[in-house]
Amino acid sequence: MHIKSQKDFWSGLMFVAVGVGFAWGATEYSFGSSARPGPGYFPFGLGVLLAILGGMVLFKALTIETSDGEPVGAFAWRPLFIILGAVALFGLMLPRAGMLISLPVLVVLSSLASDEFSWKGSIINAVVLTALSWVVFIKGLSLTIPLLPGA
Image (cartoon, rainbow, N blue to C red; front, top):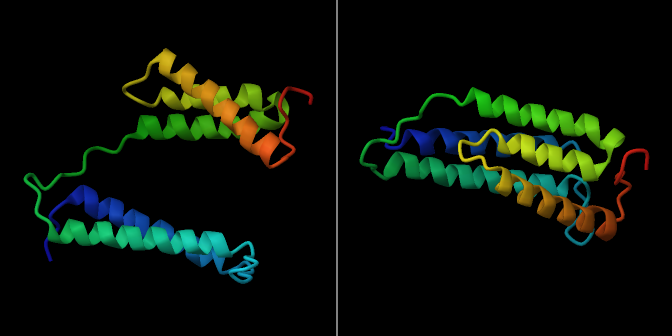
């Protein structure tokens, strides 16, 4: 068996591994039924779908020839650490600073990981995502997420 696209092979393998991991982890929760799904129903279904998608990508990587074999480049450590740090900071900030401050900080810091970073795009993205998060999570789902510091 010959790998015809390294990028597709490794991404497909990652999708399969993550999908199987989520589906397996979901078996620890109650499934319920289709009419009344339990907490394990949705993550199990998503895990299976992700594993199937990964299998399709793997199949493509092993069967469809590419011109250069699409080699995998160097691992991008800088963006990985920037994004992980931004998410960790968001988790620490949310209960103390509220969503209106911590979510824009998360978006702008995560944007710094991109080679195509622009302040204008990051700020627009932060405003739109914060507004939509407020509508969905606080107004729509009535979650008790602090909006402002001390709230």
